[in-house]
Length: 471
Image 1 (tube, rainbow, N blue to C red):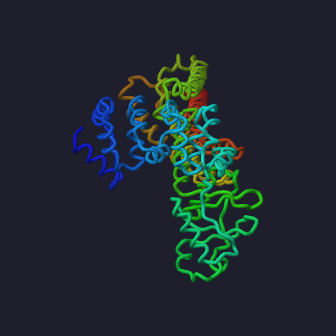
Image 2: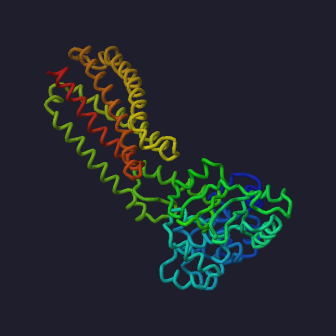
Image 3: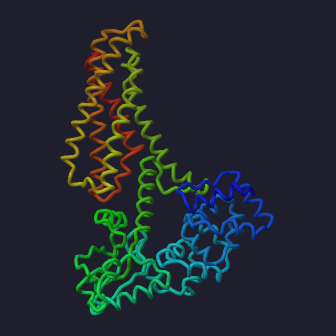
């Protein structure tokens, strides 16, 4: 192992955002593991952040990753466990003893522990869960939908009674800090555990110890219900600039807390999911997924695209007489298809992004559609003029015989303008309508928009060509 390589990795983990695990590093590290050099390996990894150590492990072959993970102390292993991809983590833990697995999970916060338990085989989860120190809390978290506020919250938080003083609240913060809990704010509840207020740590520390907490707490508390979708949770925290968010049940009883690091994970997961769906991947795909799983995730949209392309081919075949009489029309097929696809993807991608961020609501259909149509008309007009000029000035130089170039140019310009308006309208309207009916609008983009616009664009072009140019 090269000292410079090791030093660069450790420095990157401590002092900078860049962290690279290249092929040379993996090869050297595998050699050390295979030769049983556990003291050297653990010494190299001792100062790495758990996230960086998790990246190292995920880049190793599975057998060497399991060996390295067995060498890690329980505390360090538990921290790393929370950073690993779900599927890789499940494979990594397959040969871990029940006792060590229980000890590892006990090192985690309740929300991370619930995530690990949920990914274990059912029979193994049933063995490990009762042995956990926080078994009841983890069991409660597992009862919630994993994509809801209850599914991503933690049960570790600091709460004091509204009858407490600042001194008593401060002592509760100290006690919680000794248990290594992350503390972002102090929540205030009544005797029935109903949420009544929140106190920032700054205000708590600056207040007189004898003051009742009711004098310094903020009663305008932003909270969410356990069944709220995690995307909405992220929007709430972003809108109100929160670093922690209390979670309550239907009786306003405080049951958990969502911290900013959980929401960052949610934002990343939702963004990845939308990008993959927009690209035609039917289910979430991770670098550690098997070839078969990746294949089944991509195949449905490929088959759908094949069906759509076959439909477009059928439309073209329906105008085979027109193509036989005027072969030059075939040259406009890729122009129409590409332009329609690009216009549709542009409008649909922007609409999906704005829906995800909350900037546009499904009720904005009319206003949003009106703006997109105006943009489409301007873009379509400019694109049509460029196409018309190309036909009039360039086409005669490339094709010796063109019947009535001005009419061909006019036909193509009108067709391109209509296609761009149609594609933009579809790209805007379909995501908004899907969102209104509770369907992920990301499904409207990618292959769906492209295929539908190809078919309609070709149909519009050849229909106009028969009416205006051929007929």
